[in-house]
Image (cartoon, rainbow, N blue to C red; front, top):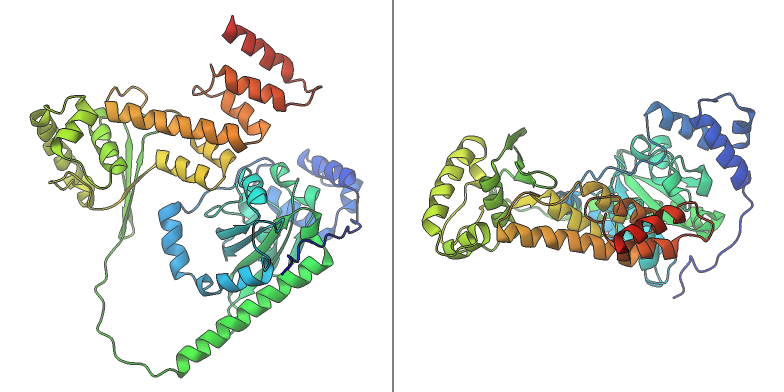
Length: 439
């Protein structure tokens, strides 16, 4: 079956891209009464003003509200989890790889829960933060089809320069809200993002029809469930989940954040305790005393020193985060401990290069000489560099070149130089940097 997005039809925009861009600049400059704003659709102009009132940055990246673990748990329990296959079948019937668009399903708050579609489009849109777990509400990124559709509770098309955020202006999108079929409560949003093919009249009809089909399927599933006889179930044991994050980027005294039972505890750890917890978080399968001593002290025979330090770490954790007290034989954590460094790696896997770079605040425990930390530090830095050099835009690469991790990277600078237009004013500065490095 051919993809419905393969039939591309040009639509006549109500205003030219140039007029919209000029109107956008006037609004950002504070000229809300400028007559050029009358050339912009009322829907878009009103959304721009709401974006300004929410203090949205014109080049702000969307916040990543859900990390990989939280996203997985949230998706499983979401009312739209059972209809994602239907959305896929209706909007990507010919397969995702050659569809030319990205299809997203978000929740009522504008957070993207599923993003599928053309691999190339997903890679490019991921660079601006269009990834699973990111918040695309109007209050987070300004005017966009998903966020504005939620704000207005109706289907919306946003074309290129109509986006409030400049990073999003290369793209166009159509979105429609999805409601509970009985209560009409807003459940989420379905969005299609791509080029001009994503904002044709046919695209809006198809996205609207998909949203209505989803609502119909939810009602049918609910009626079927009610018709089935119920049998008494034994009450299940409720387990209170605990989420923990260790922040080690650009820090030597790591921050430990633990959330559970509606309470969040933040505590600062000393360098050695940070190293121990990081190694246990990185090696989730567990470590022998000898191996952990080697990773932290560089000496597998330093088990006596290791055990003494673990006793001190246990006492600290028992007061602040007892669920994280390490278990032994092998040494391991009883609950999963996420780190901000692992979050960067997860963003890279999802193609969110610009967001990953923004999340990379610096090296992992930069002053640590523990062999295991040095190895992990190099892994994160190398993964970031290789992912950016392989797939990121030149703007992202230039931003990366300004970080300590890439300041002396002549190969990266030459790649940036090759990607810049011949008349770019940034070329001279790059040439000078390369010459200094190679002299």
